[in-house]
Length: 323
Image 1 (cartoon, one colour):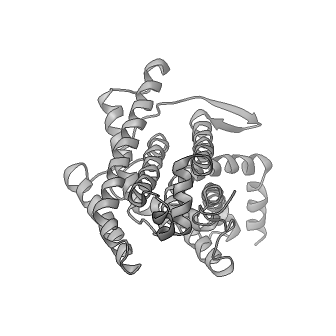
Image 2 (tube, rainbow, N blue to C red):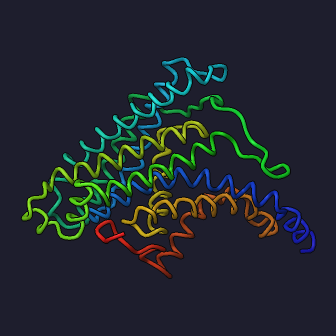
């Protein structure tokens, strides 16, 4: 026991804690972007789009393909690399938007007035179809890009933050503020809030119900495409990443308060921090009984705790409510 306590004390140094904080925020930014898509759809339709994670997976393959077609690599100058990454992101966002629009029109719209279990089953079916399609026609193995954006800054002792981590957090916050502006300050946003509050009354007041719902799916899917870039720059991709990433993003949305834009980002960051700190210190805390292989379990442990003690999430406000 004394040995475990000494290891834990050594691991809980200020430098170690700060480094894990930075790593957790970077990982959480990906969950946050995906959680925004879940929250957008749920806030308007009260529908859990479980195909959202696989839309994100398709986006990662699109980005990977565009980067490879451009022959971008570690030696590519930033003057060329940045436009390539921007192009890859825009193509992925467009592809994911088209995919999200198609899924809504084909799989969800016919079931809009059906019992809630029907669209949920349809969403799971679409998820399996997308995963199987990528496995059959694209690739059934893992792929990983070399480090494209290098460089880091020493901020305290041995603690460093990389350019990619800065990009991840800033892009997530920028999209959150942009989405807030869209929902709160635009005509489309007013339509989304009206549909979220009372679908039938909004239709009677002249709101284009199908257009608003389709655009909600388009926005959420485009955010999944943007999250694909952050993933590709850091991790390997495969046809199976959508399932786990989607479940974690759903957990983040529930933690923050599903249907709430700021809550989705907050939940994503909190989940990233919990996963990172848990993976780093669970071995010492448990005296070796648990290893960092349990890091994926933290998302679902937190989900259970949130559902038990605060089922509506940290921030309860929905899209339909005022800021």
